[in-house]
Amino acid sequence: MSSAASDPVFADRRLNDWLSSVGLGIEYSRAEANTLYFRDESDQEVAVLDHVCGFGSLIFGHNNPDITEHAKSVLDQQIPVHAQLSRQSHANKIATVLNAIVRREVPGGDSGYAAIFANSGAEAVEICVKHAELERRARIVKLTDDIARHIEEAREAVGAGRATVVENPYVPVGPGRDDREKLEELIAEIGRRNAELVARGPVHLALENAFHGKLVASVQLTQNPHWRLPFTALSSSTRFLHPDRPEEMKAAVEELRENLLDIVVDDGAVNVVEREFPAIGAFFVEPVQGANGMRPLSEVSAREIRAVCDAIGCPLIVDEIHSGMGRTGAFLASSHMGLRGDYYTLAKSIGGGIVKNAVALFRQDRFRPEFEVMHSSTFAKDGLSASIALKVLEMLEADDGRAYRVAAERGSRLKEMLGSVRSDFPEVVDTVAGLGLMVALEFTDQTRASCEVLREKAGAGMLGYVVAGYILREHRIRVLPVGPVGNSVRFEPSIHLTDADIARTESALRDVCTILRDQDGHRLLP
Image 1 (tube, rainbow, N blue to C red):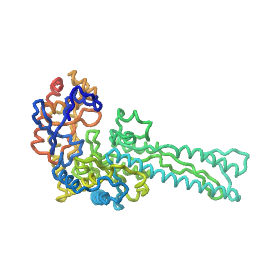
Image 2: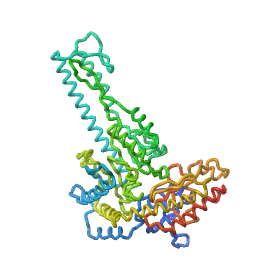
Image 3: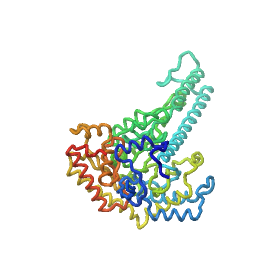
Image 4: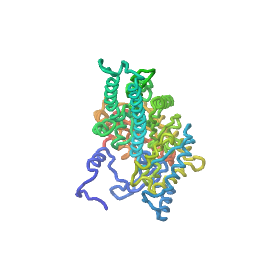
């Protein structure tokens, strides 16, 4: 049912007005492979080359025939889509396949990975936040139980006259009291201080320019202040670290260190000692930072991040929502830099482009079994999305992983073309970055351009959107900016990308770069 211009608008009014203002306000009517179609004013179908592909969700393209036929056959079988709180063997089948793949790509994963299913990438991240807190709380309970036991041991020793309370650098003990009174005073003050620390929420670590979602917890791991700051009171805080400054990572961890106070009896003396408190909840890392111009993590940074997590005992959560499922030429982008996670998140292409699905994987030796019943979702691991996930994994692994090789080769060819454009327009193109079919081209800063249009759009963070609107209008190619800055364009097509597609894209980019070089910004406007 189409909507007339006079119909009331109850959804997307502001968004659609904005899209139209930058030339992106098109409604698509059909899609296949790397092509979207819309109908023009004369009702003729117009094809658009899609480099966005569902923000990287379509490794096999729009409406892949193998996936859609599989989905039809599953629906024709009338499988139970929803049968909550029953045995669902399809969940374990997916987890088994994922374990085999992850173990192949990640060293040190011999214990295996437990799977918890979700509906979206952001939800998978929030599942990891919850489980990390469950881990942290278990460590806190053990610490506080140990301290409580030590307190009783001290009471017994002092009561039996086998120990005396001595001075300590943490809690002053007033003079003129016997040891029992001193001990109780000591216990009370230590209890008060420890209780304050135990009541605090965790601090999470993430990298600068991170994007981990926009839900209540995941938005606090996403650095963009426009998305994050209005909601800081709703969740745990995050310390953002520069990935290429290991000394800053170490300094931040030291700054965040906290200690509980404990009482021990040693050689007839009651002493106060420190016990390290797990103040840090988890370290969240994207192997390729999608919102930061598709920049991959370096091997050096990967080693440093792993070392930081090992030193403080917090889980390393590798967010493969954007970069995983073969997009970078391997199932996990983190395998390129040897990054070994304790948890992994996967989403996007696991839905095959037609359903919503996500999964969080946890190393078995860290997994808390009670979490399987503590967290649940009405729509997670439903029968249809599970069957699609199994089909996608089968297609990725087919022919000895041919899809990975194609993604790597097509991505290399695409990046080579972008590099050629950069070489010919060095005053216009700043960087080209990415892995496989997850790459971006970043324009030079235009906030001081001689052209008023370019200067204004760049200053408002809108240059990338205006460029995207122009490329769509003039070249029938769909791109979008990367991240909040808006001075770059992303390329995340499916493995069906052809040489002709790449040539068309090159022509469009050279046109845009010529406009920017000549400071002819008015040509970009709708």
